[in-house]
Image 1 (cartoon, rainbow, N blue to C red):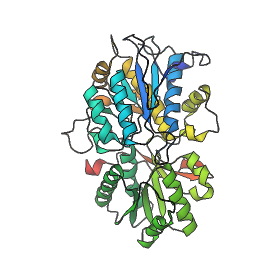
Image 2: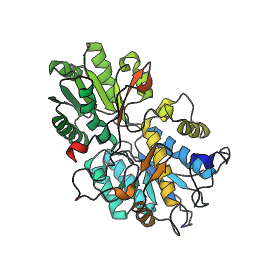
Image 3: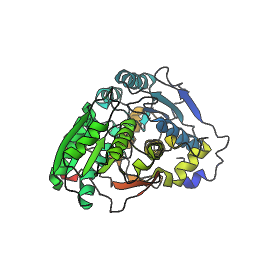
Image 4: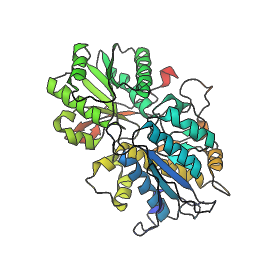
Length: 403
């Protein structure tokens, strides 16, 4: 078994390392090396769209592959990596899932897909494990091929009511996109809020397309008497709501998932981001020295914050998690052998960031959110565009009250 941890990577030069990449940007598949001992992985996310845009997923996954291959790969074989751009569209997401099945990849890593209700069944049928996706829909908590590292947006949003209460807030609104996934997330937040004792000001629904003026939605927070709000929008919508709330003088604590709002977005809107909360299972990406060093080695500009966000950190971790599990396989590495190994894996040290127990993930019959690990989530905030701790203890398992 070839180790993939930081200690071994320091023994091998990254410069000039072999990085086996193949293109899959919504068309064209991975190149099969023909070597059954080789781990083939693919990241899936949207790039270049207004609704959802995660170029950091490809950057983070690619940097991890380069670092692992520089250290000898998995069991002496170089990882083969490809990326598929969903373009933020249902058809694009379905195409990416079908191509993964057709190409016979061994695992999907770090996926950010707002259409998992439609696409995960394709991965299930093909028997491809989905390692380290950012959970967005309930199917992510139930599918037997889903192996998340944490509870994703569900965990971040569920931690919100507890954080608001700890800060002395009295009434919470939910600002959400008019979209099936965010509707389910908002309903979950209201259940958690009720269990925690946080009064609700209801849901403020923002159309998924065609909105140019976000002021009316920001104004509703104030009109409903809310002194805090969870905001369930994509990166661009969040920026627009925050700008509008700042311009209107809305006196409410606003919070979002760290997977939707990072330092690149905060710096784009300037002082309006100061004091905004983001809730994270990982802390600030800028504080993970190994992640940033790997991005540096992969040629990502130090000041390109859009490629150094939390979804990219998650993808980087997902590649390491998949590689660690693959390294335990004796014989051919396939989607089937990966799933078998994942079902046995416990206490996986994922780059010192978290300890992962995929073998302990439950079945759909095991209650609510059985495949979301009980990961702690903490509140971060922004000061001068930089992400810093907001203070307060992390919430150990935000979903515990409704599991």
